[in-house]
Length: 232
Image (cartoon, rainbow, N blue to C red; front, side, top):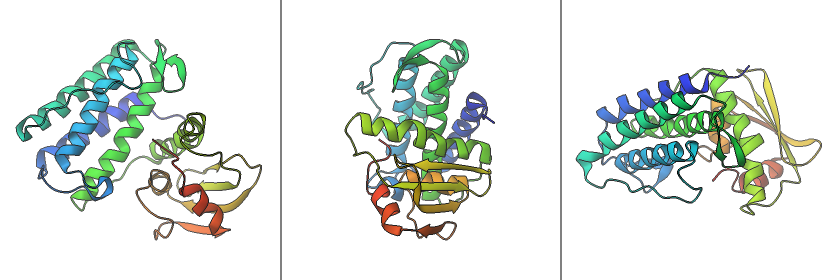
């Protein structure tokens, strides 16, 4: 099953905004060191603005949005650009043609991409406040799937990492889904855990010794995969 990318994006954006309004903007975000909460909000707001432009064919892959620097402007920057992105993607519909990170495609790509960008950064923000993140496994399993099927192959195409010749199997214990990461026909390492935890592993937010993960097989195969830049 495929999650409702646009609806879930709106939910995650709203959760980020609620936490941002409560947060100390100067607090460190360990997962994105040396960023503060304000830096994280500036980054995500800028990504939203850029993605809205991409979906409308008005930006390029290397465009850098101008971000606010005054602390009082950060929350408004995030909220305005979250609304901008959601409004653009709603208006366009999922089938509108547009450029994507992997070539010509449709606006549905940006619904999915920005949902998962937001999921990871919501975890970053909540973790900075010693809070946990709970999401529908249908969403977080799709976060894993995007890395395996879109982001990691793109990293190879852009020569940001070498092809993974040794396979790693990822098994989501909460979603009855599995993936083979890498170009091998069979896995030499297997990682089992909740889909959110698997996603965080692929996005370098946690390490394989996390208590919610069970690793079997050749640990060097997993270490080799995680040593590469699987995501931007």
